[in-house]
Length: 307
Image 1 (cartoon, rainbow, N blue to C red):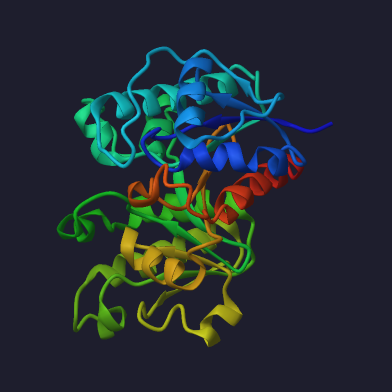
Image 2 (image 1 turned 180 degrees about the vertical axis):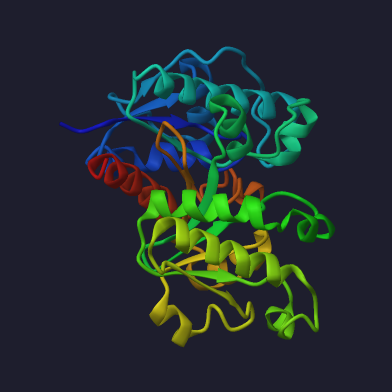
């Protein structure tokens, strides 16, 4: 029996709804999708796109409506995308669906709507009272982010032995990988303290986590500028990066069109596309790359099967 997956529709001024409509038949091979959008907004978007709505396209009753302004940041679109996401996680929390998959939001639209969160993961963390972990990647390479959407100048203060130790333990319990590379923070992983002291904290956290797990799982701190070299990637599929761009710049350079976002350490399964709203091509009926979305659905199904 195919699982039910709630699809948070994302910012309707972007490409999310077109991806959902164009891939419905494909993803229905893997799951029974439940789209968190009202029939009224669905028809409005489909009319703008000049696309037929599949007969078995099941929707929910997300409240509110707004004019679709292709490629434009608006408060109402931000609010609707947030409400769609809340509908999806509520359905999952109640057990009415088996997992959640999210299409892209626009952070500026959320800000205009006075939403205090900068992204999906922060909402999940608050909603469930759990330390959700953001992991992105594909089968060839996954990256877990110790810090996420914070200014770069604040990252060094966040790197401490206690928090990183717990992060590493939680990360392992979710991915169960036998070999995980942990990046240093500074260039050359500080060259034994010459270029910074944060690596001392990272080294201690690695040692603590391995001791608690009674396994030699975590390696490092790895020198960040060589961690993702072809040779290094022969040794590691899973990496832990200290900050957002440290992990995601190489990931997107290598696997931009196929990587996904997975939220770990939660009572529900949530996957997502790893791309934005692409306002520049929204509603222009250009060819869209749907690989990330299809991979996100497949990963949600795989995680359900492995529970």
